Length: 85
Image (cartoon, rainbow, N blue to C red; front, side, top):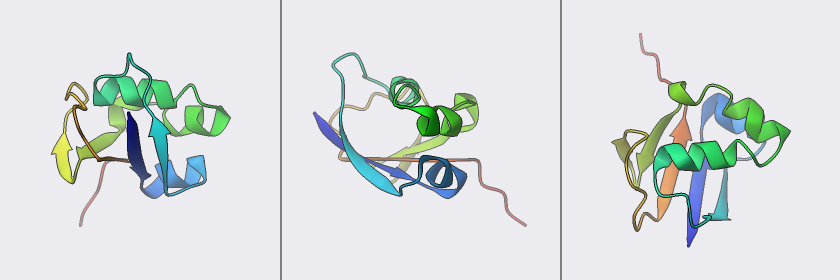
Protein backbone atom coordinates (compact mmCIF):
# COMPACT_ATOMS: atom_id res chain seq x y z
CA UNK A 1 0.00 0.00 0.00
CA UNK A 2 1.33 3.44 -0.93
CA UNK A 3 0.81 6.33 1.44
CA UNK A 4 1.61 10.03 1.25
CA UNK A 5 3.52 11.24 4.31
CA UNK A 6 3.75 14.98 4.95
CA UNK A 7 6.32 16.49 7.30
CA UNK A 8 6.09 19.84 9.11
CA UNK A 9 8.37 22.22 11.05
CA UNK A 10 11.62 20.71 12.36
CA UNK A 11 10.60 17.21 11.24
CA UNK A 12 10.62 18.54 7.65
CA UNK A 13 13.87 20.41 8.22
CA UNK A 14 15.70 17.35 9.57
CA UNK A 15 14.47 15.02 6.83
CA UNK A 16 15.04 17.59 4.11
CA UNK A 17 11.71 17.27 2.31
CA UNK A 18 8.12 18.32 2.87
CA UNK A 19 6.44 15.12 1.75
CA UNK A 20 6.91 11.80 0.02
CA UNK A 21 4.98 8.74 -1.03
CA UNK A 22 6.13 5.54 0.62
CA UNK A 23 5.22 1.89 0.26
CA UNK A 24 4.20 0.61 3.68
CA UNK A 25 5.82 -2.65 4.79
CA UNK A 26 3.21 -5.28 5.65
CA UNK A 27 4.00 -5.11 9.38
CA UNK A 28 3.30 -1.38 9.66
CA UNK A 29 -0.31 -1.06 10.85
CA UNK A 30 -0.34 1.94 13.22
CA UNK A 31 0.98 5.49 13.24
CA UNK A 32 3.54 4.52 15.90
CA UNK A 33 4.79 1.65 13.76
CA UNK A 34 5.06 4.04 10.80
CA UNK A 35 7.19 6.45 12.84
CA UNK A 36 9.42 3.56 13.99
CA UNK A 37 9.77 2.39 10.37
CA UNK A 38 10.63 5.88 9.11
CA UNK A 39 13.35 6.18 11.77
CA UNK A 40 15.16 3.25 10.09
CA UNK A 41 15.37 4.90 6.65
CA UNK A 42 18.63 6.76 7.23
CA UNK A 43 20.41 9.31 9.38
CA UNK A 44 18.12 12.22 8.58
CA UNK A 45 15.03 10.17 9.44
CA UNK A 46 16.67 8.86 12.61
CA UNK A 47 17.39 12.46 13.65
CA UNK A 48 13.82 13.56 12.94
CA UNK A 49 12.28 10.69 14.89
CA UNK A 50 14.82 10.24 17.69
CA UNK A 51 12.13 11.21 20.22
CA UNK A 52 9.04 9.53 18.73
CA UNK A 53 6.82 10.26 21.74
CA UNK A 54 6.82 14.00 20.97
CA UNK A 55 5.74 13.57 17.35
CA UNK A 56 2.11 14.42 16.66
CA UNK A 57 0.18 12.87 13.79
CA UNK A 58 -2.89 13.38 11.66
CA UNK A 59 -4.54 10.87 9.36
CA UNK A 60 -6.35 12.54 6.47
CA UNK A 61 -6.27 15.84 8.42
CA UNK A 62 -7.66 14.44 11.70
CA UNK A 63 -5.39 14.35 14.76
CA UNK A 64 -4.75 10.83 16.03
CA UNK A 65 -2.73 8.96 18.67
CA UNK A 66 0.23 6.73 17.85
CA UNK A 67 -1.84 3.58 18.39
CA UNK A 68 -4.32 4.62 15.67
CA UNK A 69 -4.57 2.08 12.83
CA UNK A 70 -3.49 3.47 9.46
CA UNK A 71 -6.22 1.51 7.67
CA UNK A 72 -7.08 3.00 4.29
CA UNK A 73 -5.50 6.39 5.00
CA UNK A 74 -4.49 8.46 1.99
CA UNK A 75 -2.21 10.85 3.89
CA UNK A 76 -0.46 11.01 7.25
CA UNK A 77 1.03 14.25 8.53
CA UNK A 78 3.81 14.17 11.13
CA UNK A 79 4.80 17.24 13.12
CA UNK A 80 6.29 18.35 16.44
CA UNK A 81 4.17 19.69 19.29
CA UNK A 82 2.70 23.09 18.55
CA UNK A 83 3.08 25.99 20.91
CA UNK A 84 0.91 29.02 20.96
CA UNK A 85 0.95 32.39 22.53
